[in-house]
Image (cartoon, rainbow, N blue to C red; front, side, top):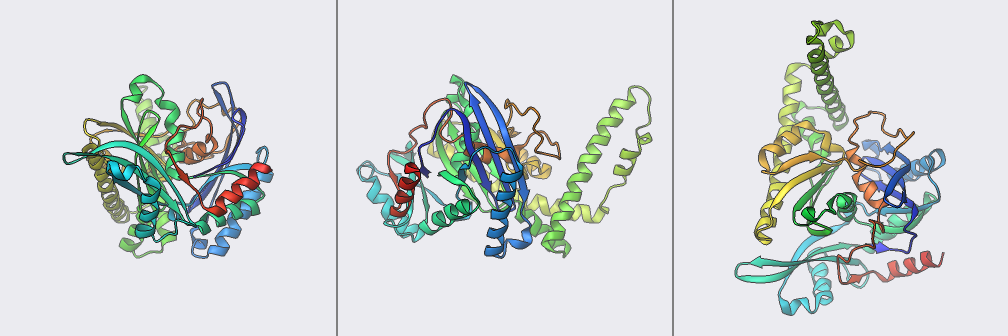
Length: 418
């Protein structure tokens, strides 16, 4: 949304992803086509402080300062994304006559639809291209808007944490950029890929072809909804529901590993229960009735989310006739939820895969994910932020016009002078 001048070789700015329940910081270095991770760290935000804006802000600032002091981050330049709940997104279709006055049309739209002041608040857009509406062909664009106070508050938080912002981005753009590197082959340019980031409060859906974003949808369903449903069904607190979900995941992982161990041992005639670690895991941590209630609760929310994503698919295939979706890549902390993935595989008639945003990166001597799940799919947005301004070529023209707030423009000028 806001871009400042930055060097595009070697050391990259820190990519900072401040989510609802976690903070992720990553810094990359690029030499030729070789990308290495200089530093990375993450911290959990206790859900109990999310109800108090001041306490949450104080915690985030303190934790960022701690990660800067204890990590191997170099410099203070940072690119961060505006919080999803402060970002307004919608798709618009314009007739040819309206397309000639896009700026005027967008100003009217943000005022009427979002109640924002086009003279004070920020507006940006992506010009997608021609779409079919009945027998007509119209120009479609994706409108992004945010109020000036949210941008100002976010920048002040970064500065308070000792960072120097060189860019403010949006989650959908950072998400797409994270995977754009893998869409450089000629055949990829002709295919539509969908990238879905399932966070704690929001799910972000981005459709893209080649290096172009085609459609964006932000769905207000995420991991917190799973916890809320479990809490309601079991009559427990949200924190207890979150702990129970953790136990369910651990139990499933342990049982899966037990099955693999047993299979490997059967070929040599060993008894799988001889290993005490797997014998303990086999006992489980949840009683059968609790486990079933949890599975049913998670499945119900997963079905709801899958329906919303399916509607995005339907909209895209109708609007962009002849452009089929062939695969969907899932990232975010909730992409590890097996029940959700199983539901998605049933409802979406495309190939489903879990993202590996750091695949191919040099991470020698770097251990920033102690759970060793390997895919590191929750780092997609942070990686995309650190890559802003670089993808082996200049940033693509995804919009022909950028309307920034007067306040934002003055802040841009001050950072460029510095």
